Length: 292
Length: 234
Image (spheres, chains in turn yellow, blue):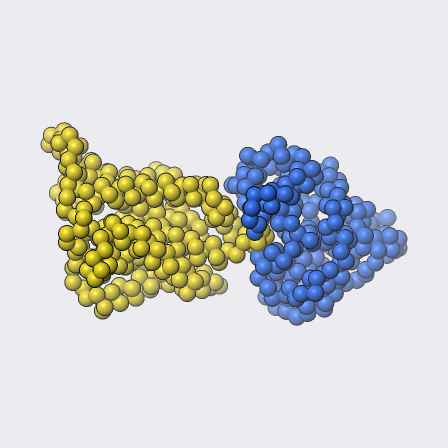
């Protein structure tokens, strides 16, 4: 193992990690806002990837241009999921936790089933996108351009999110709702509106990630599952509900995954992630940046 | 201005207030007093929309309020400071106040009530960057009232503002309530500390086990021999 292979693999790990952060942040945002884990998060990613694929296949819109459209579509979708499903699930008086889990879990299965039916289980991929298959080399290290673009989009999205949460009025309302959803009515804020917009925002962010992923990954009905699992680890690692913990958690996951592949056979590449996760859970159960 | 007509509100089948009617006229300070469990908090929640009355009507400036969502009632001009204050604990004092004026657009418009809030509670202006949870009980109450004022209400409703507060600050808060009324606002206040509160109130209602036992001007209530014995300990 040379120094070059180590740097090479850590660099790719970093890029993937930034993308993992972007995939996971919506999950963290929604959990932080209303203590609901969206078990359909992977399926949100899946439909974003399909949307990107179809925009490319039918309208020849490059994934890079499609990304904002997909994010906007997912925003609407996320808000509707809150208004049509989650809003009712959180009202449950008995077994509230179970009802929440199974409502989004059920939604995930429905979405996967519909995708299998309408889109067939075939693996699809976007060929000949602007960035697809290209690499960028710097000092002897080769970086895949789509992942590089994903990393930049992720950094831009987190920066925008930071300013949105800390500098805008809606960001304050979001924070206030996180703190005490029952109290925002005292200042005339409709918590259902904040929740719906929070779900929209969370879904839009995973939509952005999906558009990037579609550039270099196969699109199929179950694609969300493995990435959702990584997203849960990312969020738990970063601290459940912490938006910027998801950023750091994503980078940790990406680097650990890359580091594992250096040492262990590729089929064991997830082992490192879960080992680190267990370690964090034992040492610091609230995650790296979580507050309790 | 506010009229509650034969309102009955129940929690899980237990009637907390029963056919209660009260009136609040513009510019008044009205006290609702009574022992623990008399239904004082339920009365104020039934107006604020935090509890939905089972029957009866609440009208504010001629428009029905009962059945409206709580945030809409706030937007109609009724600010409610609940018993446990419900501040946003990890947000700063400034952010808590700013959220009070969330409904308004335009900076000048939004910050206009700040001057009054700082006049009433100068210590808030010294603690703007502190998290709300780090304030003392009295300061938290001041912040809760300040946040309510930021919504620019026509009617301010306070639930037990003296609870858990040092006596010295209680006087300060009651004095502030009086000054708030002097700016033209109307105040409905629920309090167990009846003697002090009667000093600033114009009229009072006494609740007992969910019903209005007695009502009158502050002077009438203060002078009533039964009240003096049962509630004022004289």
